[in-house]
Length: 410
Image (tube, rainbow, N blue to C red; front, side, top):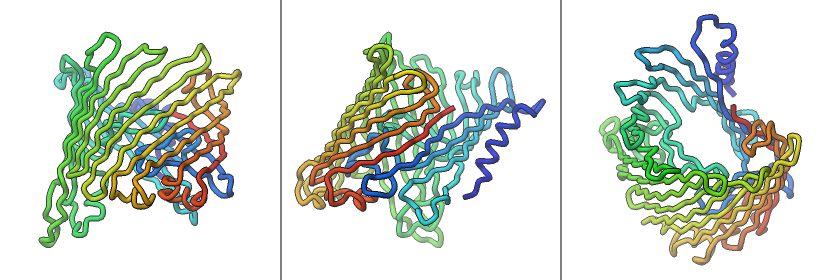
């Protein structure tokens, strides 16, 4: 593993106190790591239904993630602030590369510069580089309803009266078209133009956000006159309504349609947070998505689940998460073919956790969790199991994992 980027980040953060006249540096980040076993022996197994877009994440994450963020304020000019943001990151799935368990992949997840509070841009921001962009996430299943990560540039959060407007030009972080037979040049890439309008005050206790992203191939020609495989155009439109103060928490209701060539997805989703008394927080999500494809038929996916987080005393908490997924494959799809019919695939996952956390709030961090995760699925789902789940529990219709995980952000 190349540890230089991570060490560089930590060194930069530690230099804040010793640099008498250096830039103001903010050090933040995220990490999770742990250890787990499955009840048949070997590493923890994580469970996700074939055809589902997400999995329920509590006690169901088989990876390591470290994302230290260094943000340095370099200058001020006419009321605006100018920064550089650097995020080296490490990620590894437990079931990948076990012959070299310490060979973690280090990369620069983000490295960009920006100016903020620019009066000529309606008090907005201008930026360029590589970054996490347009991430709209549902927490307990770690789903990104919107995500335009990559290399690019744009203007962001301009105050336009009814809300804040952002426009960017983004390209995939990797050159070329993965899997394209004649991909011989960096010209063979896609680009997207995500536009979002957020903070639209349509109701007194909430706001509306609208995301529109178009994408297409930047060039079809390649080196030596070789024609690259042509890619279809894409369009995604999403609208998300937030209502604050409901059931002691907040409601998010969203609808999205996206199209890439002849592949289409339509979805509706609702997330509700709330509180039971003074000690228990809860979070629930329900989602329905229809996928249509020419080549593989597509499927319909329904998911519903919830998590409770109860303060016990001292640093201790108890968490319970239950999630149920159902996939109905279209006739002729690969999922239906593997199952031998067009019957529904189902999976239910339940996780119980005892945690120690630095606070009484459900989102207090750091936290260390001792968990037991059990998942059960039907025969159609068993015939579509993949990866480690197939290797360990492929002859069963249920599986269990136990483990300890640490997580924090700062």
